[in-house]
Length: 244
Image (cartoon, rainbow, N blue to C red; front, side):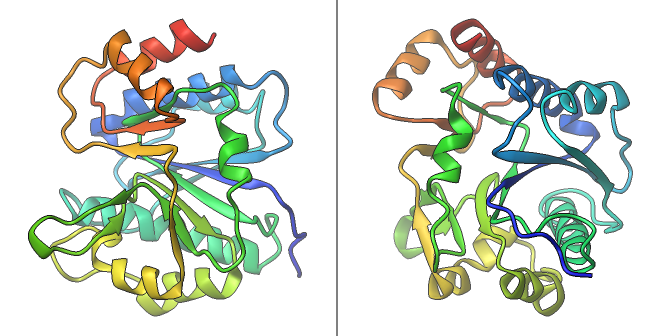
């Protein structure tokens, strides 16, 4: 059965028990930012194998998005194996569901972690408008220090919905065996296939809490649309204050 091709984005929110509350607050925020049921994106919640979905949040988000849920079958825990496992568990769902014609063939897959948030209400449009042929991974390009490799941060990564690309990731790569994150390990292969830095996405490792109004104003003035790297609720609270 052939999937229906769509220009829609599939927003994927990955979570485990340790960041579940923050992730669910983010999901509700993203729903609240939509003025009506989205025609630009669908939504997929992906829980780690040992986590459950928050049914109330799923129902809440379904008011504004077509929603899917999946519990990863990968058994990894801790960093980075837990993160890698839920990512590849998500890919298994996406690739096989598209291949079987059970969900649309999305133009792009936007992988999100719970520690990010938008700084503009029209944030989805920025990702939709940057879905570019020949680019397979895009997002915040993190420069490696002291000769280390550059990589696109995986906590806000826009992946091509090209089925051959998804097949390569899901079936050929399938997993990461070294003790490092998938985004860093696969960086050279992503670069060779085609990647792109999105200047409106910013990723900061270990951002000092809290995220203040001064931080917000500075990021907005510099053109940041999505900011990643804030643990806790300070960024989410500012999003509600400033965007709603």
